[in-house]
View 1 (cartoon, rainbow, N blue to C red):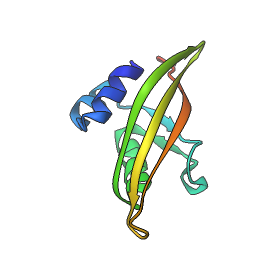
View 2 (tube, one colour):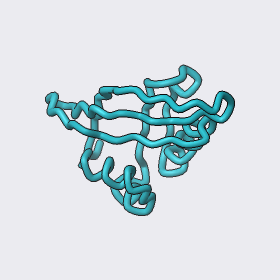
View 3 (cartoon, rainbow, N blue to C red):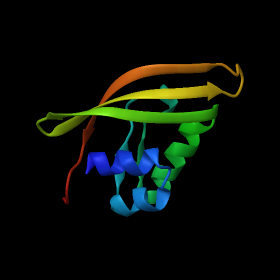
View 4 (cartoon, rainbow, N blue to C red):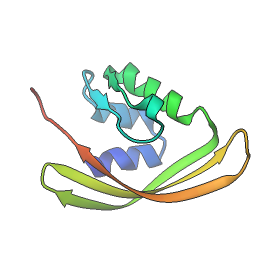
Length: 105
């Protein structure tokens, strides 16, 4: 599932991406700028997160290169590439982020 989500994201195929998310998705963000550390609900909540996350960038992309089984989580190793609107400089960094899915309640 995590690989399919990343594949849709990297292809910028939002229809395929949101088809993989339950309409009642709960997106808990605890990474990046502290002002985005919140919980988003439903498809519109996820869209709101991405609008807020991408707002400071002129260009942004991320590429996953490893998916590591970590029990209840999948750790995704990926690199982000971005160009900021204010400074206009490109930057890149390598991250690892745990991803957890709960199927049903």
